[in-house]
Image 1: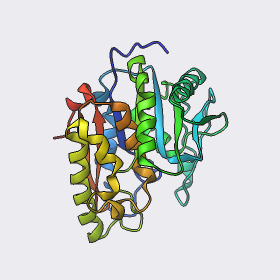
Image 2: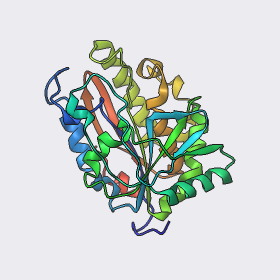
Image 3: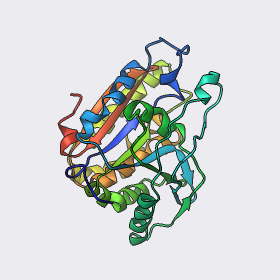
Length: 280
């Protein structure tokens, strides 16, 4: 894929909220619960710095026994949430897929000895279409979605990111979509507030500190303070491992943070453009 994006693109880990939260009246807390996160997602262009030619998205809601690469030229919608208002099942995000980019991803994984397969039928899950409706509302940038591997091994996902890193120089934006805190039973409790704050402080230190030490810290994330209390199952954290692996030794920055439903939630980006957009 030819690059027109003007240099190496950053890699970004975003929070995607709760279900279709940005497109409904929120009744499970204050009405403005998700407003700051929505504003952050709408301002996404300021982090990237230029329009990408294509996007490779890694969602915490897509797992496979090996890495799966969506290869449809026109991916459908996958409404993988339940119990929300009827109109939220009528959302559309008609961004094109890119069989060309899917082939390129597959080639890079083959070069690194990473088992994978194409999935020509799966649609965009809400980890992609919900935030991307705010980030790129015109839905005119080709998107390929790539899965996590269901063993959720952090070392593997760091290596997965390293394998796809060359895409950054070819106009492809690598976006991991998850949540920096994801304990569904904990949201809204005083314990979640304490756990999320201490884990967020640790995670931010890892992501924004010395890039040469970042890999080890993320690989051993489970040893961090309140780590398992923040992620009883780490599928929403693993997209961060992929984008951090793709970042190589680029500097990281926290580009968003907010308290949402009693928990601290943050976003991180890696690269020169990203560090210039630090929320701090």
